[in-house]
Image (cartoon, rainbow, N blue to C red; front, top):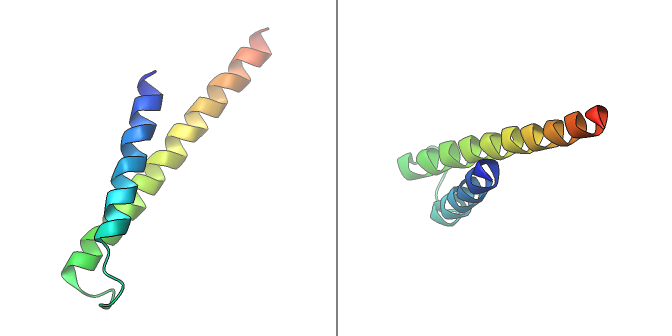
Length: 64
């Protein structure tokens, strides 16, 4: 349950940062750097949570 909440929060943060990114300016703009860091961090969090959820499913199958 906690992992699903964390996954939802990470997806929301990812969407917010994607909308906050300004495609008209260069990457070196300070607001774009902050948005890119947020996009990268939330993407990493999503991948880690998904790996954890998949490993739990595998562990349950091995025990049964």
